[in-house]
Length: 391
Image 1 (cartoon, rainbow, N blue to C red):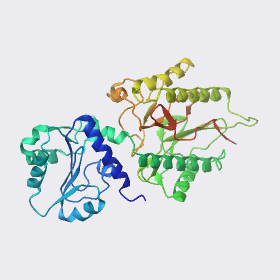
Image 2 (image 1 turned 135 degrees about the vertical axis):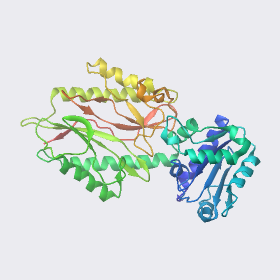
Image 3 (image 1 turned 90 degrees about the vertical axis):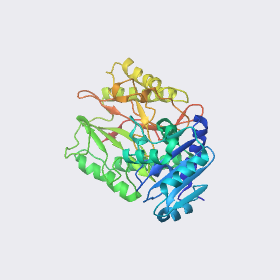
Image 4 (image 1 turned 120 degrees about the horizontal axis):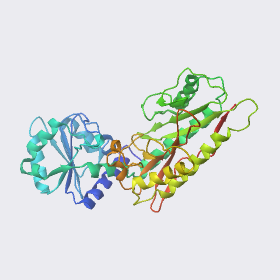
């Protein structure tokens, strides 16, 4: 039976395995008032006092205040919970680490990745002082922690799948009610009502906010009072949060003109191009692939069909955040740093969004979510097979 810490147990088991693979002897998370962003992912605990949580390839240890000790013990996440009262924290940290005799200790600091940069300067200095000679063993946990965030456990995949199903259900409900003459704000409110009905919130804002809308203006923005009229396209980019995990799905609509029964030829061709570009990306998305390779497979198809080069990455990871960091399915660009050179691994979940989107001409986004499997990838979202037609 699932309990409040099932997912955290899965992640701690992953952490132990990844530490063993990487040759790191110990991973230390120093936190106070939940200051480290990895706390919800890894432990799900509301810790108020100073605490050190240490994971090794074989054990999980917690050094925590007497105020926090009961919750930490009841979670049953740790092999040992060591408690201090008002003083003695620093000595307990040193003696515990000294028992382990680690040669490599990973801690959460990173120059490039904010999700792996949870240790404040003050906490870093305090930790070095506590560790004494073991301070020379410290190194960044960036690569290890990003893998831990990126490679989803079975329960994480279940939560993402549920978020996707709810997102698609809301889309279906909204598209059954949208008509020309409605304003974007009115349509956006339908999404909000759908979230309220299902007890979820927007995955980007974590509030009851409408989706991102694109119509005439290609910038990501909220709904406006613009009225939907014949010949318009309307793009929604929508996410929901289910149990702390997100979907990220975009859909394109076309408003039929008088006498039309289908979209214009240019819109249809653009949609077919994007549909096949997603196929190409999915075909290249498999363990061992490099992010640039997957991006190139989809991007080249769009270029071969005569469209301009798209200005963003073909895909990104999805998980606790809509943009979950790590390996990016993108070209080599300065703003992406080294993310596009990352390796695809089994258990990662990606949003795939090759795009035709310009100030003039047809604009299409169809964004799907896919799980990397042992031999390739599978879609978690039901595909948009055709443009959504609005009467």
